[in-house]
Length: 600
Image 1 (cartoon, rainbow, N blue to C red):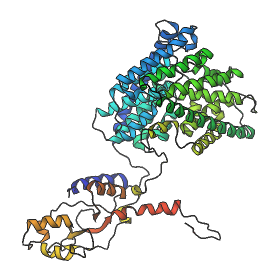
Image 2 (cartoon, one colour; image 1 turned 90 degrees about the vertical axis):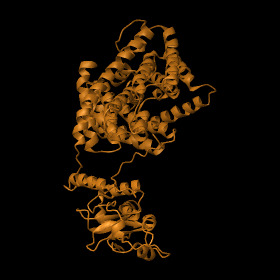
Image 3 (cartoon, one colour; image 1 turned 45 degrees about the vertical axis):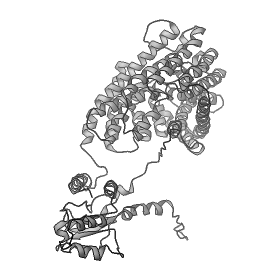
Image 4 (cartoon, rainbow, N blue to C red; image 1 turned 180 degrees about the horizontal axis):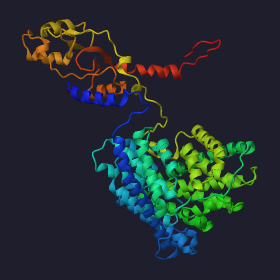
């Protein structure tokens, strides 16, 4: 048995300092360390966003305007039909080659890759990803791909945070915090939405809500947002100069808007993976898929050039009511088809901007029939609801719409629309567009976060105090005959001295070792046993002891007092599961307190 009582003692002392004060949270010095690191991660993420914007501008100008410039312009600014046909296909060929001979992790929209690194690769991302992901995305978007820059920036920012963390001695959770800080800071720098970016971390990437992670992430997001005016320009991305009067009729129709957005979100997600399945059936290497998918972009660009590229200008037109009627329907059909086919082909690009465009387009169509004095309300609600339905991030979507437009008057209606779309999505789809890709790689993500009952119940509450102990002055021969015969009662026994102080644990394997060391069996257990047992403490959490038992492969651990000497009880694997009886009572037992009785 591995002797780790000193380690257990250190763990216990740290746990005691952090928790016995009965505080709501468990503060740690690592919060200060990670917060300091998050400042540099936020700066790096802002620079990554600026660099990607410049790269997209360079590729767009070169492909569609045949000039050397770095301005962020829409592909529709060019008038060459040949450029519209050839540029996307050339971009798809280059991306396929980069993925084939660089790294295939640049394929896709970035957020699933960040999730996979967080959950299954100890938050480690490669340097090649940090270099090739923004480059491939700039080529895809710059050559007309109907994507947003935010997904690649999120993944690249996460890679920067991960690489920064890998340069220091950090735990996997600390690296995760820096990875998420970089990813969300990239989103904050792209859209000037630091609060929504922090909520994205809470709702999707962190898998916890603790000060040790949310504080560094928030710091990185606000640092990146503070630098944005100097790098990408000030102000909201889509300012809406309106004060919406939201009454009962508008709230009722907001629910309808959310319902329709949830249906569209479900259809778009299913279509993407259906088309992806079709690409997998092609008798060609996946390297060629982006070029094939780019054909749809070329055809769509010929039908509606506005559907090419990121489309921020079109989103602004939809939110301000400058794009109306049949033009919205054409844009949605073309944009939706281009995005679905090209993203399914495994190219590199984000999903937020296309979802904003499609959601705003849906709202634009609804504004033709929905009531209200200002038809601009519905594109705003459709935009937020579409995000909530596809990505299943209701509160991030609400705050995202608010920060993009700086219009708080629509908040009640946004709450109704986004919550409704979120509910429809949850009922109709097993997984979101973000988690489905990870599930297809053989991993499963469960996104319902609850309090860990093991962590919030002490060993004192579950340990057994009635024990069968072995006196330390018992001989080896007598111990073998009395406790390890045919009627052996327990797998292991605590050995104590005359004062009830724990000497060590005795199991069958240890018994065999003692008999080999003392052939005649006359020596006492106290003389032969080591004095460094694996122990637990009564005020320790069940979770920390369960981890120790799993690492040491133990069925039971003795519980001792704070001095680590007097034996107080035993805790077994079964005892450590007792906190989950509360789950049965709270989740399974239905009760009626007026004229009823509990039923299971």
